[in-house]
Image 1 (tube, one colour):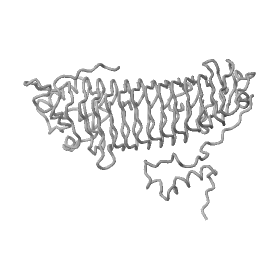
Image 2 (cartoon, one colour):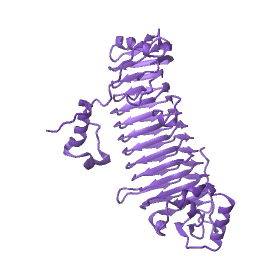
Image 3 (cartoon, one colour):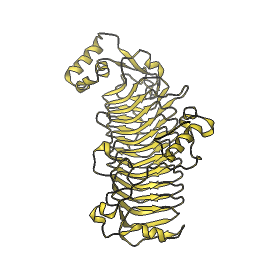
Image 4 (tube, one colour):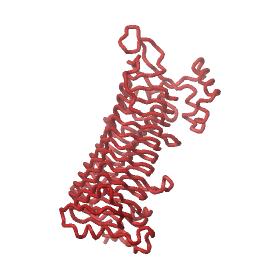
Length: 454
């Protein structure tokens, strides 16, 4: 007889569901597993109850907002009087709550401020603040545990996690301002988190000084026109397929958009700027497949695009087209290269290194990926017939830069006079055969007319 002494009933239900659903194991189902029709299970660790004396004194004497919720009939519109109220709040019936920007709900720095455990509800114009700081119980400003809800115009601050959706689909999360607690970056909560939540619209939100915006096992969501600043990952996808990221602005984060173990997905018309530091990266791939990266501005980043074992699925590709890579340390960096990347009609300008391959190349890297119609600001050739295409093929070789590629500690000296001299001598009379990084048969001679989005 099998025993599971450490599992609660809810955790056991999840384990059995993942293993037995449709008679397939999770490995057989793969990252495309669709759990949207699976029965809802209790996936939250029980929230502890805090007495008023345990909460910050600022909430002592405030009226509990829960009383207003309890008195409101299901399906009604609740317009609470302006003022400050005490949390926590649990909503377990369809309601429209409109605070008109004049209602503050404060949990006094303990637990979760509000739980929406209902569908077809509206939360609008509320200020949620003062969650606890426990990662064990995922203390947040707003937990969403329902479908087809509208959450808009909320101000969320002094919270560990901002908005947390679990097994919640077809929601609209729009025009909210989210800030985390004033903690070290790694121990802040996520500004917005989706877990097994599909077909949600995440639009026009501001997520500032948070940790990450993450989507785990969450498919076909749209992230549109959001602003992210001073966080770690602007968006991090994990086993999350066919998500769309468009028209966003991400500044001063460690990483812009990261696709990890994903299939499909589009990132287009975004601005990703100043992803700097040791891990600074505009867009990253880890064993991802079938993604389209189109018409983005990726500027002032440590690495514009970093790709590791991507595309991963056989016969799949990653399309990188119409983007601008400008003033980055490295425009595109491939590690563990498998080929299958198509780079077409991009602009490469002002980068310290345009393209590099991690580790020592095998002189076949240039044949694994496809390059055509890109503009290179270091192209050395002419356009005698005036067709806008360079007369000669653009070839990029690795010379002295192979030193810091193979020895990352040498990157500190990358632009030093000594390295510049070594590079000049290598190009003049190579000490060894240089590696061919890429070959663009039809390089653009003139920089395409483009209005910088940034």
